[in-house]
Amino acid sequence: MESLGQHILLDLYNCKNADKPWEKLKDVFTAGLNSGNFTVLNDHHHTFEPHGVSGIFILAESHLSFHIWVELGFVSLDVYWCGSNCNEQQLINIITNFFEPEKLDYSFVQRGQFED
Image (tube, rainbow, N blue to C red):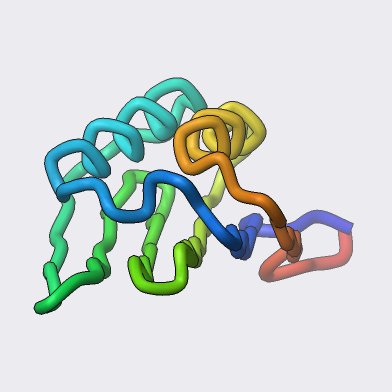
C-alpha cells in the first residue's frame, strides 16, 4: 500500500536544553531539517512569558511544529512530510542530541494510504 505522507510525533521528557533562546533553537531545528534533506521555506514562533516557546517550520514537504514547556523540560514535536527523499532519523538524532532527554516517546504514522 502506497502512502502520500509520513507523520512522526516526538515527545522529549526532562530535557537539559529546553530553556535555550529562540535563536539557538532555530539553529538546532534548521540544522536537523537540513541534515535530513528537508527544505525549509519559512518559520514562525512565539515566545511565552515567563517562559516557553511554540513554533512552526513550513517545509516544501509539509511542516515541523514544536511546543516547549521550559518549566517541565518537555519538548513536543510534530513532523509531517510527503515524498521519500527525507531522512527523519537524521532530524531526530540532531534534535535529541541537543535536548538530551531522559525519556523519549515516538510515534510514526503513514498518511493517505492508497491501494496500488
